[in-house]
Image (cartoon, rainbow, N blue to C red; front, side):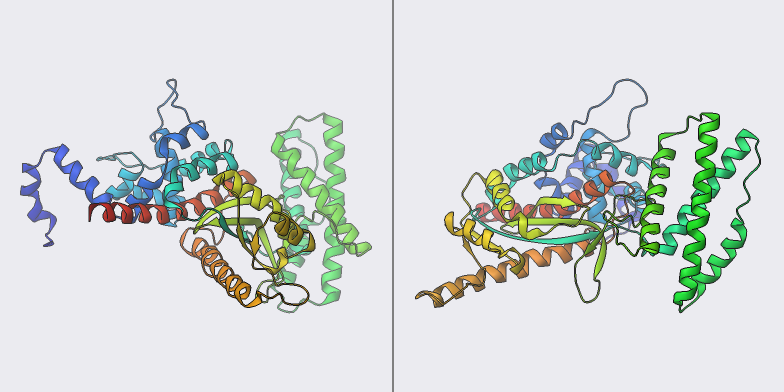
Length: 451
């Protein structure tokens, strides 16, 4: 096709009706990857599952119920921030077709609408129910549903690497701010805490390249004392003035108290706390020990995933660390609940090869790629080839999907602010990748029929 400038096309556009022009744009849109994603998504069923309704009262939302879902898929396809997404939506006709919206001369200026929609959808997300909707729509493009592979990974949250001193200083800074505001409101004198002195000392400590044990111990001791002093003062004025403060204040206060207890026990007795808080703003995060060479500890959501013919589904997602080996049975039950067919072949890592899982697999006549125990059987050569094929499938497609989702579908660092929205972020990232893969299969099937 010959490329032309817009100035040369102006005369041609005048001869086309708006309907003909829209039909041409849609035809071009469905040939793109974004069009393939659009074709693969069961929009009406998703609107029902997420319980999205149009409200007649008040200001009408720019996006339709379908458009709200589309915006979440589009974010992971575009792999950019909320602000950039809205900027691109204002100028990209394909993005507008995908989101069921037409932006004429006006522009969307409120980029926070993306996070508002994310919060709205996060309240009604039910992973199992929604994934059943997806599978029912995609099952004709999934071959061999009786064969699955499974593994776990961690989708990291965007949080700075936590240290005890950073966490204590964040707690002190927040308490100092609250104390100032309350004293100003109540018109009472602020307590003497030497906050500015310790602020200078902490700034100097944080700039040190090599932090000695002596300096680390002294700054930790001082911050613990300062934290205790602030807590006592706030507790006293809350009781004396019978204050009714926002719920967010009490939640953060509770988190700060927990940080103090954990850090005090760690400093005084050397006890490693259970349910250790690593972020004051994201108190649901926990250290996920993965034991990798590059990154031994990660902070985010751990996810056990199962894959059927290259299409991924979430079996379990949790911000607390768990042993994925204990999820073997549940993974098989989840796969059978989706496909309504008995699982015959399972590919899994060595951590899943416990005695309990081996007995379960044998009793249910499930072939695995677990390394056999004891003496090799008569059919060892044939079994070894079959196990190698299963392992290759898991290592290439499943583990490859982890890297693909993190690098190309905005799951490398989850930038959502709450637990619910982080889960939604991961959910849409995984299923955007699934939708593109399914859309490509749909197009191949259409071409085969027409050929």
